[in-house]
Image (cartoon, rainbow, N blue to C red; front, side, top):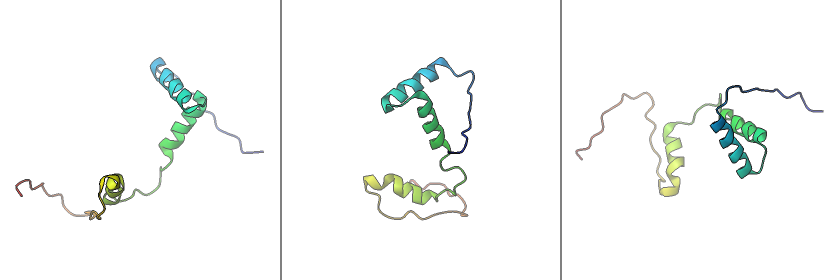
Length: 86
């Protein structure tokens, strides 16, 4: 037998939010309760994990449109204004 599962009651949920959750659940072929569980799992999935450096995240985000080169990390360096003259 598995471990006991926690329960969570959400009060004062807007009717509009509930209706949207129900539609979203239908689109994914599951119950509203399972849809909410999936949303909550996704919201905290990376909680407590160290964040990847910004340059690494940008490279991954834009790799599909041709960004292949590394973006240097600027951690600890003072901010500099952008130079739009060149």
